[in-house]
Image (cartoon, rainbow, N blue to C red; front, side):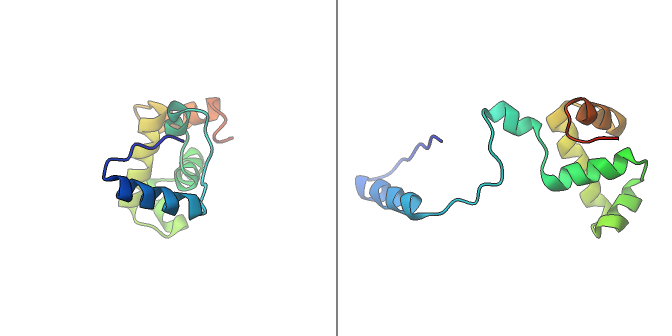
Length: 102
């Protein structure tokens, strides 16, 4: 991990001490930033799996207890990460990359 810190020597030292004593909450490990950008969050993958079953945004929202706007947001985010142009393309690309199975 790389971190650029700007500030006085005292501020940098305080930050270094805080970082050293912190226990990180690692939610994913990736070899590169590009690899991290391509993979979806657990919720995005969950939404995509339900979409792959043919569920509408409203049905996905009801199943997960979220709003249909949140479903749209998750689909837009994962589609962007995958370079997909629509929901069908997102499912296809996710299957090819092994993110979901049909």
